[in-house]
Image (cartoon, rainbow, N blue to C red):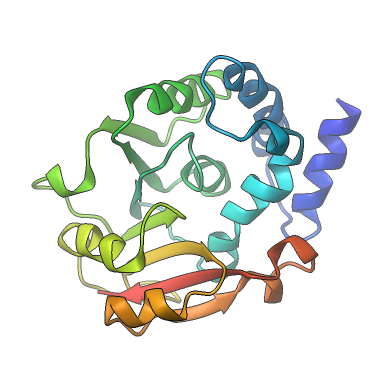
Length: 214
């Protein structure tokens, strides 16, 4: 538990005012993911010991750029093992998160993590984003799933218009590396925030939060 407290300290360098329940949920992430990762590989083996830096804090860079209001509805497209959706769901317990992936066994892990940690504001769906009909969300979030052009193609039909937060309703995605060509090919003009401006850690040097408004 001491190591879990140290890991939580990495998050608390940048965020405060967690409830006791949120603290326990964040602390529990590593053990439950480690247990499931041995059965269904959703995090690279070399990364599992860095889960709080590489996955949890990285996911929370979205929370650092936008404070989602209670009742907001968010879809996580291609959620994989639950990033960024699961850490964001812990951070924003009054926001509704719908995690979608085309690979069912990854959602099995997400559901098990949410059940074990009593995360009640997450629903999951085994499908492709482009097959979702008659649902609208305030934001779409995603993490290194596909090129920006594709993410926007999938997200745009699912997002309501509106401007109720610091950021207009739209797509918020996490990207890394040299993205000039990808942005050019998308034909979009995203707002780009370097994660290194949010968190003072070398790991985030070439990682970015992209926002495309509806």
